[in-house]
Image 1 (cartoon, helix red, strand yellow):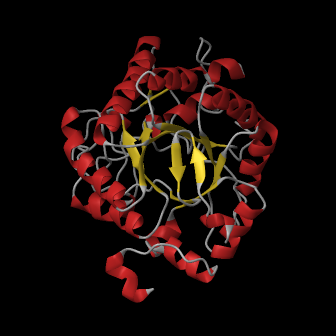
Image 2 (tube, helix red, strand yellow):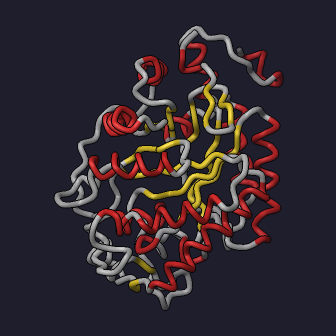
Length: 353
């Protein structure tokens, strides 16, 4: 049997295979509330055989949303619909996960199909963005407010409270979004973080925000698995890079993080990314080899043989897929058939096997 469909223990969890649905923003919430779109969107992947389904970047505060259509978990009232989603995922033999996020200076934006432009703080659909330093992502964006130390501490607490609600809602994987140029990544990258206090400057200070969030989040976690998504490189000179990612990953693993979910880019608009099939795999492999951490790899992994080869060669522990799951929610069922592996199909769908 292909190792792609072998089980693996991640912390206290057992994943039935190595295929995980990567978080994908849907921009379809209102005031942070999930609805039936999210139930059907996420539930279909559990039916399709994914080992775990990680919910889109879910904001820990209203101003932490990328757009006004993002999911949120800053209010206890958000929990009820999320419970419905996690119950469905579990009932269909998959593990529900949630990605907790704060967009920082990349917040207050329009939905992508409406142009992605950033709203002014004074506009009805906009708000004042925040960041480690008063630097806008695009020259046409509105300058974010530089966070004061007490405001940083408030956001750390918001991550803690969001984790508490996520656990109440039934999520078994808590992933912190420290990638793609959002707030945690903004603190990590010297291209975004020009602070001179304990949260800026040398590597040890720039990673402090993330480590403090992990410390607070772990106060809420019991049997849940803690994952962190990082951008392994900014793809820009003098930015966050692979060597810093390796050093950070070593510390994260020592702090009890179960999976380093390795992506890249997003910190600055002048990035130059060399895109191709599995183009981010070398970063996950380097982190795995240098630190011994369990890693997930992402980025243009589209075929069964490609995914299986990565796992067979022990280049990563998990395959995180986004767009190909949108194209085919039953991707694991079809990958298994292509690899001549007999896996369980939902009884309602067995006639198509």
